[in-house]
Length: 155
Image (cartoon, one colour):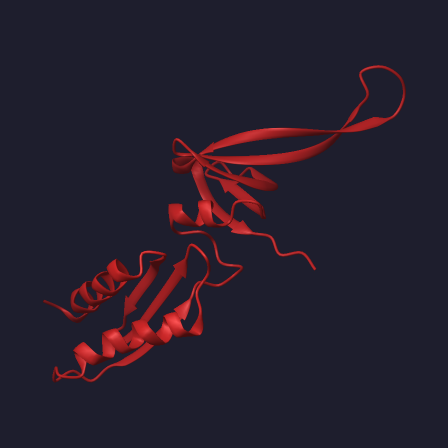
């Protein structure tokens, strides 16, 4: 079993006991630099990262392997890589880019039957009279048609 498979098995075992956390990325370089990125349904604390780091280190230290280990939380501005992140970020403003290059920004309503539900607001002319009204529309995006989705942070 190679080092990446060993680490993945240790992560899977740890995450079985911490079901609110999930793996978003695992890389192992040729120099055995291990980088683990996790996310959580309610976020990730520093203690979550420490616990996972200890679970990995504690089982690899007995091996005759020279390695470095970084365990970190998923970045707030990174593109989603896991279906659970759509559920976690419901209620937040996101930007979705489809495979054909179309970009849509709106309120993420959640995930339903493999489709992302996004609510947008547009200003349209009133049906009667002058002026404009704000109209809310829901758009459905098939997960397989999304190239990239990320949270938009506004200050």
